[in-house]
Length: 234
Image 1 (cartoon, helix red, strand yellow):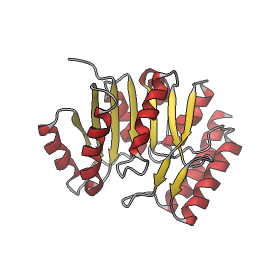
Image 2 (cartoon, one colour):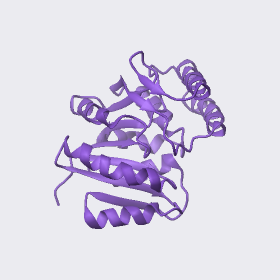
Image 3 (spheres, helix red, strand yellow):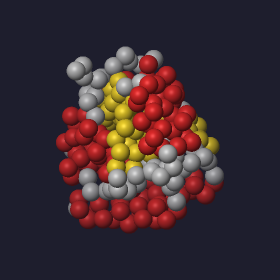
Image 4 (cartoon, helix red, strand yellow):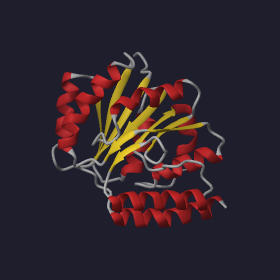
């Protein structure tokens, strides 16, 4: 079986409506980048028909693959499972609501080909163009500032759901990552920096998706996760 160059992962939990658009857009975008790819839908025990939708797509196009969990495992755990399963030398993921402009996907992947271990989109660089509420903007900037101060990170935006990795480098990090849900993004970037990995951060066009499931309670929880990770790494 021919090995894929790129594995794109889309984590999904009860977001069939967004998935209906995300799959065809992903196929069309990736076809312009490479002829060797797979799309892995990391479906986390959804009850809204997301699983069945992916199964139907898989029958039509074998490049679309379902990775289902019978129990809710959390976003971070779903990503770990999907990346371990992925066959591509380059792995990437993005949010199912396509909040980040998919025109950036080529740059995300090309930066790995050019030598980066991790590539990540950023909503907080000067040239970033974002659309979201004032409260979410304040919360995001405050959170990322804490990460930069407490964990000594040089990254500006840790939680943008638009990242790519050299798979070999990523698999060296995953065993040490303890975050099972939203904090996964931050922890993987912090541990990547600690490991001396080359990380490329670039500005993106981004707008809040209709189906976003991040709550302010999640943001508060991630605040405590910052301190937990600091304690582990000190």
